[in-house]
Length: 512
Image (cartoon, rainbow, N blue to C red; front, side, top):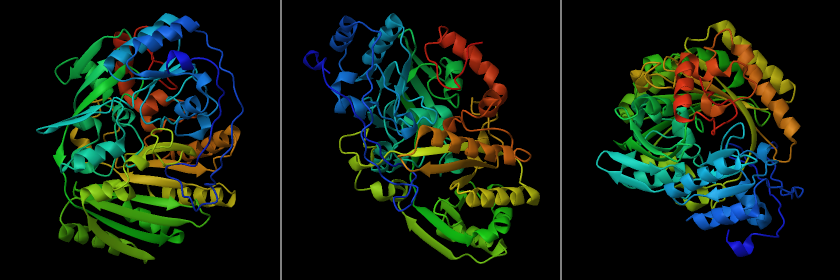
């Protein structure tokens, strides 16, 4: 924003359905409706805002900019549309980050940084100042490494790296940002082969609350580097650049099979041992899904090994299930095509509508929670889960559970080698549902409580752990769930690098 546009426009918002939803689902109705105009009474003097505008290379978006502001303030989850920041700084470089942090401290504002805007509990927005990093998105490849700006979005990273035959372990929701993914650990379809996203991090450039730039690695500020690998986003500083090791890409074979829900117990009995029986080049999901009112069990595997070897493992698995799949297919494609899917030729469009002017990916209303399992679930546990899914469906509560194999290269690190604690898990689970985007916040919150109840149901067999990138406000002992015994060390690092607690988030690290 420039001085001439500082005063005098109105605000509105548009809500969309979102990532992971299904446009054909009755739970994914697209609604376009203006939100009520909400005045934002800034605690900051006009002269301060004007000075900030002059001091930045990037721009500031303020509430009086109407449609521009309302688009800029929106995050992925419609649940947080009621939050109106006093301002949004679109940082062009590290100097802008430092300038904005100085402004925050001088004016006693809450601050949060934003990359993809997918924070599950609203940590990507604030009533204070949002630092939007999406313009800090340069991707620079050197021999064996890539340096990625802290505001880069996954679809752009996949696009630029695969064009050079390279990859790093990333997630599958393409509008997610590199910062949140990495800082929380980074689970994805090739992590058994190459480790988590954070396991491939070589160094990071961090801007602290005092505006100091710190370069950290295994040998330089190692404690901060340790904390950034699984300690969660928004806790210690703002990461302006990440440097990762890269790997050469390979074609990926994808196997897919569907089973009737009546076969869930026999499918799970065989599926859950795959992380111990399959080679690291093979990764799998099982997804009981009742979002559309018809419950199915969907299995897929992503394989980097040869088609011949992968087929043998897959077919042995299918033959071990005492049921016949309703479908069983296999396809092999390039790494790029598999990772980008339908976005392969539409990179600009595959950003959120609130991220990029050409973006067409809709936003969402959703609720989710998570679990980790260190041991195989016995038959009584699988029966309990199946019964709870059936009860949920009969109660009209629609959803899915996304269960991923772990192990492999993830276990090349011990539980205290990085802040990511869940190294011994054999598989993880995300309890997830998406909702119509015109539902109330109260309805979303009630759905969140229901998602959390899956953790209660499965507590006798789970580790009690939860994934910090899937924050759930209904987890009471969240420190233990997200970080386990690593939490104490994280609080000490927090005290060292953010002693005043400038960076505060929902379920964020506290200072020792």
